[in-house]
Length: 240
Image (cartoon, rainbow, N blue to C red):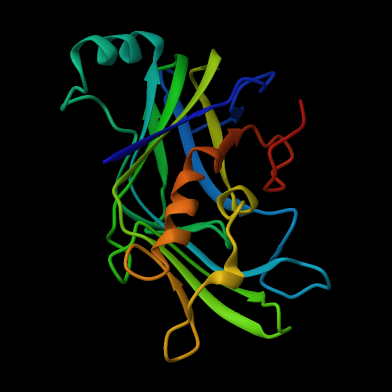
């Protein structure tokens, strides 16, 4: 499994938004999870003038989401990963990052209140085609032709999102977690005009087709995830 560390140092309040919940156990913290894609240089579901890419589908195959305290992270550094440690979200979740949904739904998880240092997200290649990440998009080549392209990553991936100050979550609240995948960062430095298309005209980028471009995208993986609070529930991480 490839492990990618993503360090998030500049979140002033933390990466969890807390709101009141009358039905939650007052001794536990409730956590819900949203995952979405973001781009400022391109377009999602609709072409705009001068947009570099048009993204039509962004899927990731999530199998585990886990919160770790400072103590758990230090123990893991010393003794290695513990097989029976608690995992807040576990299963096979097909997360649609354009629509901000998952199948099945992530639902709600309960965990002990306290300060957490790290969020770990594991992805496995159970999506159609044997991918852990699948992205369908369009681009305009040097001949002004609209080209359909697909990127697929078939690796097992683990992302670690950390905050050096920790994330404090309180009992008796619902904590909304928002994780954003930055599509601009993922495709940074990728020369799509050098890609070879298949007989059907589709450019496929994976470990067997246009593998040099797939390698460039893989080198960007440690830059693509960000997490933070979303006070106004608008699908964007709030400014500090």
